[in-house]
Image (cartoon, rainbow, N blue to C red; front, side, top):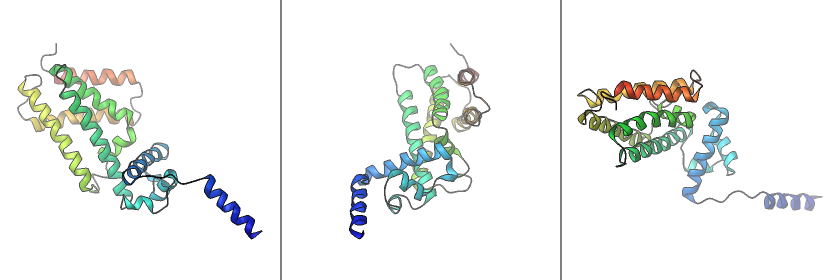
Length: 213
């Protein structure tokens, strides 16, 4: 009987091997698994133990990459800022687009990003990190330049005469407040019609542009 149990145990190990990751691959795999858990059950139901189970690794493996749950949440938020910043920069640097088209895509693209990534967006701008002063250095190093780029874009649109104002920082904050409000109304279920969201976003574009074509 003892030999039978031993053989069965070995068979189970062979039949269900743990995934093999390179060091960098495991971190990305853990982030992807964490986002899945958050999407399915919410932030409060995410833990490093559940994350290890989802990724199919040992319980200690996540701690090689994240010191705790807050560190993990900040890493997810940082990844979101990198992607959003990349999308905004790609549009702004596109020479085939007019200034008005760039501004329109900035507004609509921001809301679209929030709609496509609601849980990630909530981490990027939610109180669980910022109001509680739980941000990591990694997150701050990504988030602050992202907003600074927004200020620079607004300054260029002001200089081009597209939008009003002579204070790029304050104008950026107002525009950010507007698009964040639209995004939150969508994520929180106040606005549920995608077509309506598009109309609201385009309305915001027209309100900010001084002389729309």
